Image (tube, rainbow, N blue to C red; front, top):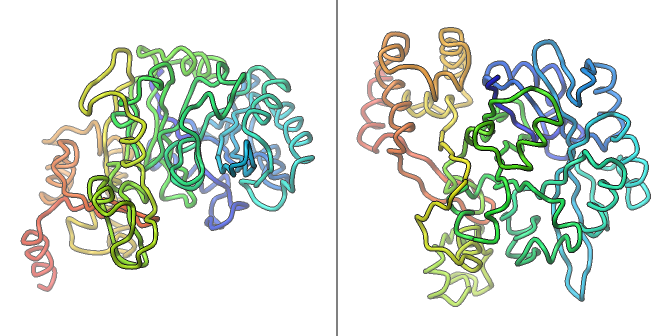
Length: 410
C-alpha cells in the first residue's frame, strides 16, 4: 500500500503553536494534503496524551486511527546538558509503539524535568541516557535525531552540537538507524558525509499549524503497521521507502550564514572571507547548515552514494497559487482557489506530483499550471534563508509578477 507520512508535528500544547493543532484539524489537513499517516507529536504532554487516548482508535498494531487518518505516537525532547565541559542542545524524536510504552516513558522522563511545561519539554538529559531509557522501556521504540543540522538545537548544530553521531549517543549509537534532515537540508547535502551512509534519512514538516502539515514528508509502499515501518527504516529498504518530499533547502531558516538583525546573508565562502565576523556589527555570525555541512563533508558535492532513498523538492500549493495570482497566500481568494483545486483533484500532493499536464490545464488557470510544472522541474529562484529567516522562493520573474498584478487591477 503506497502512502505518505509526516511523523514530526507539534500539538496546541507546544509553544508558538496554533490552537488549531488538535486531532480533528490535523486529520482534516492531512486529508487535504493527501497524507495517510501522521505523527501525533507531543505525547509527553499529559493533556495531549489524554486527548489522544480519548479520540484515537487503537488498531493493536502500533498505529491508531481517527476517521480515515492513521496516527503513530511521536514526541520530541529538547536535551540541554553539559558534557566534557561543553553545553549541548539537541532535539530528538521518540516513536512509541503503544500507549503503555508512552506512559512508561513519561513516568521515567518526568524525573528529569517538567513534562507539562511544553509539548516539547526541555530536559537536562544526555542524549545517550535518553536513548538508553527509551530502549530499555520498549525495544520497539525508535529514537530519531531531529532536524540534524539546525544551528542551535541539533546533533550537528554549529552552535551546540557534535561532529559525530557516535560522540552524542556513544554505546547507544548502533540503535540509532534514522535521522531527520530538517527544512534547511535535503538528502543530497547529507550524502556528502560518508559517515551518514548507513542511516535512513526522513523528512517531516515539524509543523506548528495545520496548513503547514506535509511541507516535508515521506512516501512508503508497505503495510500500515508500526513494526513494518520500523523495519523499513532500520533496513533502509528502497523497495518500500520510495522517496522523501523536501522543501528546497535554501528556503529553510538556517541554510546560509548571517545576522538577521543586521540584514547580512553570507554564503560559506563569504563567511570564510569575513573570518566568521558580521561585516556590520563585527560580532560572530550565526553559522548555517550549508557551512556546517562543508565543515564536516568528506565527499564532493553532486555524488550520489549507493543505496540512497531518492527525494523530490516541492513548494506548497498555496504558495504557488499566491505567486501565480500576485497575492499573499493568507488572502481569502487564495484559500478559495486552493480548496477548489483540491476538490477537483482530491489532494494537494496529487496536484503537485501526479496530475498530468493536460488535466492541470483543464481544471486550473494557465498560470497556476505553469507554476506547478516549473516547481516539478526545479525551475525556481531562491534567496537562501539565514539566521532564523526563511528563504524566499520565486517561481515567476519580476516582469511576470508585474504583469499579473496589472491584470488583477482590471
